[in-house]
Length: 266
Ligand SMILES: Nc1ncnc2c1ncn2[C@@H]1O[C@H](COP(=O)(O)OP(=O)(O)O)[C@@H](O)[C@H]1O
Ligand SMILES: [Mg+2]
Image (tube, rainbow, N blue to C red; front, top):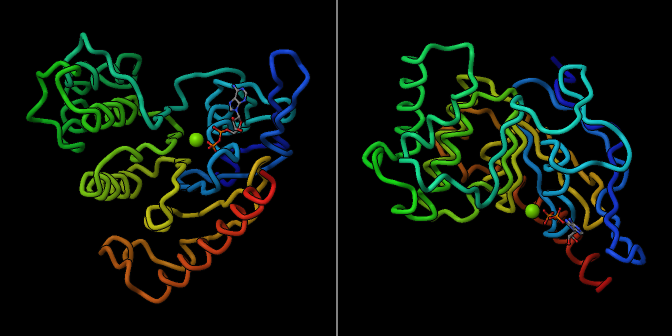
């Protein structure tokens, strides 16, 4: 489905408590995402990416426009959209396994045995099988983040909304999870929006990259990465091809320009 997830004329302005100061965060923007796409959002910090993700997840209300999923306008959060934030909380009174299993609790499409199987599969995928019975206040922040990712995947949402989910992880864990995510997407064709400030991560994972301006966010560039780099190129970690280099240079140039607009204003 070509217009599986649509942002239609979305805009948002925040107001100070006394109603005197306005902060426009998103200018009317529209974007259509096909089923199975991984769209990577890049843009200067503070430009409005998290706000847009929260709107997509139904956690924030837009001033104008609609978010439309499979033809239906969305109001508020529901289980079709699974969110992972940069620091996502886990339940400290549950073990790693039960935290992940929590993600399957509302799934009606699978049996209890399948819930256990799925829990184990994602727990292994994020490299936490050895910690299955640890309470999550006994593991590191990076591990808790992996619990959150596994829990969201186990809930099998129609759309994955990931807001800098690997931001706090060390380089090796990040790379490992990037490849796991590529694999999941290849197998399950999970529609994903993923915010990152890591240009290489964006190129590695994207079917498409969307670059935002400095605040208020508008789309300054869309890059069809699949047309430039085959998944196979990227699977082999081929980050040293000329195409990859050129793409990275082009993207960095655009982002740098947006940063300079922002810094000139302040
Ligand atoms: N609830 C809020 N109330 C007021 N201002 C907010 C609120 N949430 C975000 N902002 C402001 O909106 C702008 C965009 O924030 P955010 O969406 O978090 O940016 P990004 O994720 O791109 O770094 C920032 O200037 C931020 O201070
Ligand atoms: Mg953010």
